[in-house]
Length: 41
Length: 361
Image (tube, rainbow over all chains, first blue to last red; front, top):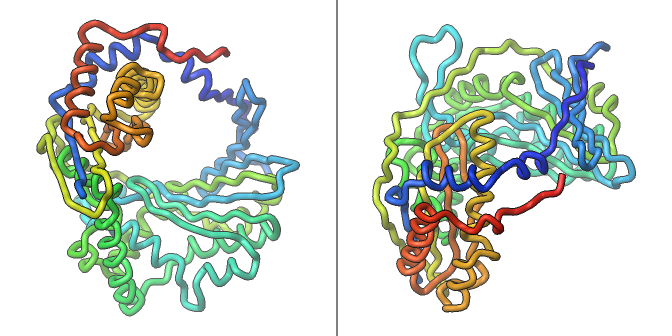
């Protein structure tokens, strides 16, 4: 046995801040690069 | 037996999972859950529909295989010379299934008794390919029918049409099952090539959870897993520009209300950076488009969307990263414009800081 590794998705989620989210929105989402796909009846 | 292992522990719930790096190269994860009535096991390989170009250590050139071959292989692996795996599971009472996605293929079962016998079946048939010209040809019609069936399914079509108009070259744009044309190129030799490349235990994972003892699982693994050499698998994808193919695509199928997907092409990532970006993107979409958001409630109250509308989890993998949302609406272009407007405003002015989820830790 080589040890115990802590894991928590809850901790990871809680570590996302307002600044992280806003930076992602501003720097990673290019609104021009969108696709609208529609299925009509 | 001395094992290379570690315990992965969740500090909040106290849950523990044993991770063993088996001497054959297989990663084994076992979660003992005493008091539960059932057990589940999944034996999977990191091989899916996007893995169409690869080479092994020492090979100079890349091998390219037809689209849909990972899914085809999954179909054929259930069948061996004597009988199919489902007939064997029927004798142990396990409920078995398999699936192929963009980047993985998994074989799984759940049971409330005879766990050991069912695990032996799982490890045995996945490690015993049997493909002949006749059995491979027999499957073509079945899979072609599955492809046609997928194309008739409105949710599937709206999603793949979005991907096709987002990615120029990346194989994520192709149906997991391939096309009727691509599967005609698949033969027994190609299936063996892919099997021997990707169904190497160094590229695979066994995960077990339920009322089971780790020692029992590991004893069965020691008995049935076949040592194999790490082949130094290397995969490549065609160059993909940052831009989309086209902004709008539509199709006609018998649906009561039009359905839509609106997706954004985002720079792909890998490893820890990908996990972190997925988390941030999930939170962002929930805050801006989720049921508690102003935009969601405004569109709902105006009758533009209904409760089917949702922001999807980030769709990500090797070389692709898509943020999307979708649902039903009579006015898809108007919904798109409202979402673009809200995102543009949030980019410029920021958004309500109080809307960020809080998790006490």
